[in-house]
Length: 396
Image (cartoon, one colour):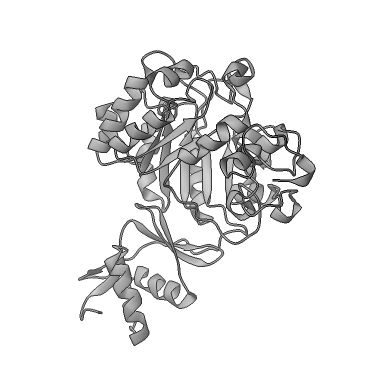
């Protein structure tokens, strides 16, 4: 119910988003709520310090926002700067920003290989942050290399709270100290944990497992959200049950499991690679996390792009050799150039197509068929079983 002489205001962690449909984004909990135009306009007025009249049909909506912690009441009007320019179509919702090529590890599976010890300048980073905000972005993924090694990382860290999107730090965890967790302004840290001690250290080096686990504990003690990323490789195939139990004991709410492509250092360490029929079923261990997509009938990556440390914009990090432009041309301009693959153009013809969206296009291409299925997803979803052969022309 509306309260007399009170102003309804959005909570600091909620942001209006003008996407394909108007939305309200809960940045802290990574939840996206679709709105009708009336609800969007009503909340926009509250952000402009107004106290718009409440119709009877608005009362249930207001009560819901209050119950979800998306809004509250204030004694005085609170003005918030809202970026109302519409997103491009399709919208850019997830941006991986590779801020440095520096890393303290030499992981045997790293797709970037032995890159330059290069850093993206703060000026270019800030330009990207501003443009991503204007484009109604939802989630910024700070990657590297190891992002903490960027010489101006803490300066970047301190300005992140001024932007209306969720910031996620992708880290190997070995440099995350207790002091660092007290300073971090990101909403979430994704730690790479590639198995139990034997499997993890087989690709990341001695002593890294303990440091990564310690980082998880430090972050959780500081109240920072933690997610886990695991790459499937030859040395961790038998560790997933134990790893699942470990993550459950640490109350991890999101676990991203994937299989690497034979790129970068994995080209010299092909003994670590696993066949789709071996790795596919393990993809099902992953859980949690949300993909806030739209109905656009396109294959993977329709709402995602990456910016590499040299400033080029591409479909994702694996497509760095097929740039869509550079930061200087503008993120919106580059985003418009990125090719999309319609689902109807894929040779896949199975009931899982809407769920897997054809899987990873880069991985499918490496398997010899740009418009065929990603076999890892076929085995993950039970479309293929065991080591049975697959006809690319017939699809998944």
